[in-house]
Length: 259
Ligand SMILES: [Zn+2]
Ligand SMILES: [Zn+2]
Image (cartoon, rainbow, N blue to C red):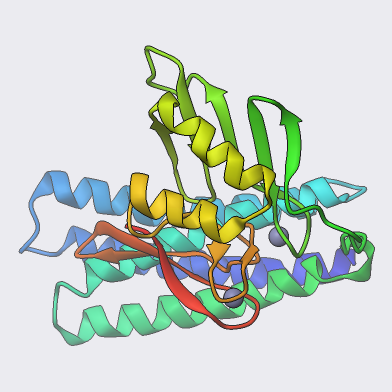
């Protein structure tokens, strides 16, 4: 295992090299003003930093447990989102140097990603197969959780309470891509659907009162809930700006889950 982890270091090194090349390219780019340059360079540095941190967790913990694996994965997911942001920035400049960097960073990241997943998929860290995952977890009369149908991790929370910026009590939704506070008056209707375990109705409720992407963690074709990992969620960027997030469920159904 230790040997495998130190092998991953080579792929992390590749990312460090391409990071330096992209930064050099951005510094010399005349079409870009200095403040944008700084922002983009810090994205590239963060991208590398997250990958390095994902590796460092594996390297420094003598006895790796599932929690370490989970944290390492989270760093890699964050890096993957940043990579789509960086590629969307490089795409603005239609020249050979830019295209070369895109191809290289994309390939290097794929190789690096695969190397990490060889570690993650080691039987030692396989999650116990969770049997009888509940559709709904009733925390209290005021709080309900919807677990991922594959791993049982909580993907969605609905509760009566205070969201981050709320001044009054609201119906707080926390999904896999974002949080949102809705009017408390809607809670009665929503909780009715949840208690009947009608996930499709919960999704439709969210389409109506939240946004047309509905319940982000829900695949309508499967009628199931998935966490970020099992929905294989990916952020997409346009010219460096966040555009939307797509999810592809384990059955291959793809849809926009945040916009
Ligand atoms: Zn899951
Ligand atoms: Zn599906």
